[in-house]
Length: 256
Image 1 (cartoon, rainbow, N blue to C red):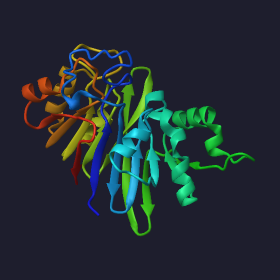
Image 2: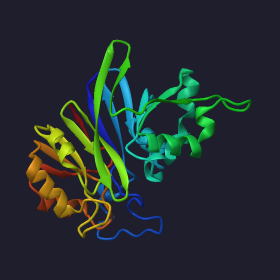
Image 3: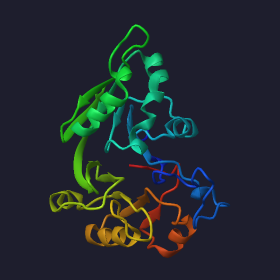
Image 4: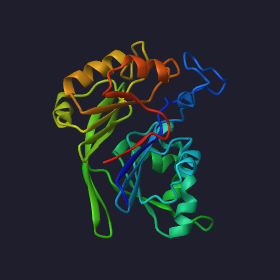
C-alpha cells in the first residue's frame, strides 16, 4: 500500500460556496472552487489517520473511498475542526475497537464536554473513542508499522493551535503567527501545507501575502495552500503563484 496524503477539504469555516450560495470571487463553474471544510487523511502503510473531523467528514470520507480510520489527530477545538466527530459510530461497529484521539488539553476538554457519549459507555451507547495522548510528540502504531508525529505550536488569534510534522511534511491549517521555535522545525520540508485565508489581512489567519512571505523564508520544495475563503479563486491562484506553490482543492493527494 502506498503512503498517501489527501486534502479532504480545503475551505475555511464557511466553506465555498457559503450556505446562502455566495461564491465571492470564485468561479462556480470550476469544481475546484467547491470547498468543504478543512480536513486531511494520511495513509501510512496499513495505518489510516485523520487530521480533524470537519462538519463535512461523512461526505469527505465517502467521496475519497476511505472506509476505515485507525486514529484521529486534532489541530484545535473549533467546530469546523471537530463537529464531525459523531459520525464515527459505523467505524466502531465494524471494528469493535475504540478510536484513539490525539490532541492538546483544550481540545480534549471541548470534546469531552461536547460529545460525552462518545467517550463513556451507557445503557444506550457503547464508548467508541478514547483520548490516547495529549503530549507534544507521539507515535501511532498498528501491527509492526508506526509513524512519529511532532506537534507544531502556532497562534490562531486568541487560540493556541497545533500543526503537525511527519516525514518532512508539515500541516498547519489555522494560524496567524508561527513562533520562532516552531519555525526552526520547518526547515528542509518536502511539503508545507499552510493556512491561506484570503487576500486581505485577517486577525486570526495568514493572508495570501503573509503565506507567500513565510514560504520564502522556509523554502519548502512544495507548498499547498489550504483553509481558503471564497475570495480566492482557484484559477487566479494557479495562474499567479510560482509553480512550487499550489492552491489546494478537495481530493488533492500526493504520495510520500
